[in-house]
Length: 286
Image 1 (tube, rainbow, N blue to C red):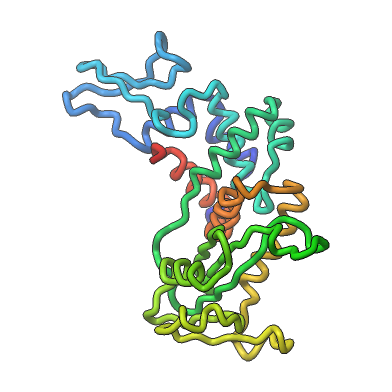
Image 2 (image 1 turned 90 degrees about the vertical axis):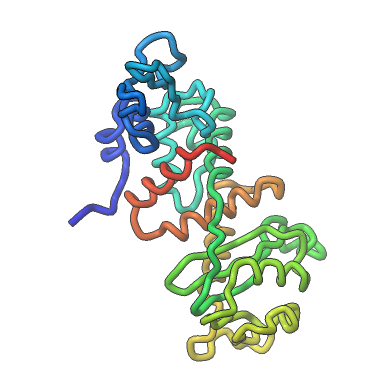
């Protein structure tokens, strides 16, 4: 049975050197044979960081890191891959200070690495269907402050039971924002939309098979009608931010939300999650 675990031992075995990392990246994105009949190999001299491959006949050059988060980085690839492994396994988040200690790099370097990784995690545009829970959450600030919701960022999330999640930081929790998020992420076909009793969805959710629980009356579960899965996600995000990151700026919150969603959608296997992260980040950034 293939192991689903992937940690430091597996990483060192698969990627012991920078050469192993760059060879893997090239082979994942290109073929060794050139159209001219020659073959590509890693240049040994004359190119920065030895990250360029050249054809033996036409002398065409290809750099696998071009356009990626690794491009123009002075950080060795073995440290980059270590950071990716740690990030992949850190379902409650990874702080820049902890990563800086692990890699023995500066805080600035670790912060930049984590920021670039989060920016590379884009959510799928595929719509959800089946039983889909939809709810809003409020991240940041403190509940002790007067009119506390004004000090928090509003986030919408939709979870397909047994499937994936979509989440997005929005400017406000009004009906228009609900409509934009719902229509973008949840199909009306073969879908049972499960929400709380918010009236902001009354006109927006027309066309959906909507079922709801009334929290204001103490109703949280009625048969299989509940939003417990998405509320569990909110609890995890809030505990992780408070425990790992202490605080997150609204400016960067969307990146952190994308990371939490990515971990949720790739929750079943450590090895597959690491491979997925590598696959995403080896692609040139748009």
